[in-house]
Each structure stands twice: as C-alpha cells, then as structure tokens.
Image (cartoon, rainbow, N blue to C red; front, top):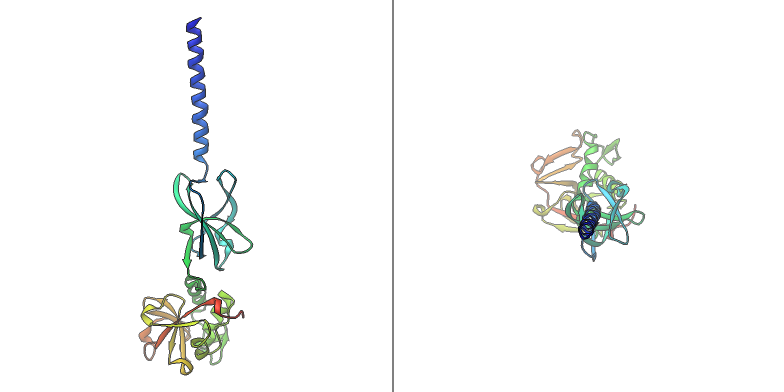
Length: 246
C-alpha cells in the first residue's frame, strides 16, 4: 500500500510539473512587455513598415492587424516607451499615435525627430518622382517647374505646409532657420543669394548633392553643388510648426 501511495505521489508530481512547464512555455511564447512603460515626449516618422501592437491588462502584445505604413507621412506623437519580448527577442518599443491610429511599435520602425522637423526621406522620395520634368519659368506644376515652384510643390504635397512661392519667400519664411551648407540634411533647402535677394533654391539630398529645377533648357534632376554656376550661399532648415497650412 505504501508503495502504491508513493507511485501515485510521483505521478502527481510529474503531472503538475508538466502542466506548469507547458503553461510557462505558452506564456513565454507570447509577445509581451517585460518592463513598466515610462512616459516620454518625442516625435517620429515611420522608417520601416512593421506591426502595430495592442496590449492587454496582462501586458501581452497582440498584432492589431494594421501596419505602420498606415500612419503615412505624418509626424507621430511618441508618449511611452518599454521593453518587450517579440518573437523570442528583447526589443525596445514605443507607443505612438497620429490621432486616429495608436499602438506599440518597435523602435527600429521609427525615425525620431525634433518637434517641427521635416521627414527628409519622404521629401526626397517624392521630389525624385519629377526627375526629367522640363524647366518652365513661373511653373508650379508637374507640367513644368521653375526652381521655387518645384520646392513649394514638393513641400505642399508631402507636408501640407506653405513655404512660400519664390526663393526669397522660402529663404525668409517664418519656419526657415539659416544653417551652414555643410550642415544641410536631406530635405533642407539650399539657397543661392541672400535673403530678399535670393535667386535660386533646391532641395538637399545629402552628401553635397541636391535635386532642383535648374534653368531653361535643362530638365529637373539630381546633381552635385558644383554643377550650378556657384555653390549655395547657405541652407535652410524648415520648422513645420511655424508654417501655415496650404
């Protein structure tokens, strides 16, 4: 009898161990937060397409079925950060929103920016769609651009903001901050001339190159600074929060 009891106890212990092990395995297989969320105040744009996660009361993350590309090109508010286990790996995650879509996103899917910063990558990607467009004096549409008509059009379509019509307007706009050409980042404006005397403008693509509507007889495209008559006088960084909507 004593031996039977020992066998029953041993079997019971094995069963409990297996059940506990299976529960642990099931829990460890879930994507979940492993740290308390902390409040932050940041801004970001989508860098890569990825999952947006919802979180329940037990900190389990579930895919919302919506991808980060749904945020589009708008600037996102980042209000919380945490550490999570996703697909068995430790990841940094941030809670972001654009007013209509909100959720947790992996850090690698975001590009963090200062408040008011332009999404330079999207400015350049959109600007390149018009390579080969003919130069038209006074042109402000894809049928033909002049230099400032092109920059105004690109900024309006990507950001919804009005940077002004002429090179001088853009150089002196409320959102313009003058910086050295060497500090220009993709999406910044490059200005030839000074202030109200500015006579040419293009968009920096980085690495001492730019994209612009050059001049009559030459189609819109990429080039190095040296391909124009001289180097740009300075660059302008745009703060979107200081501009009016178009």
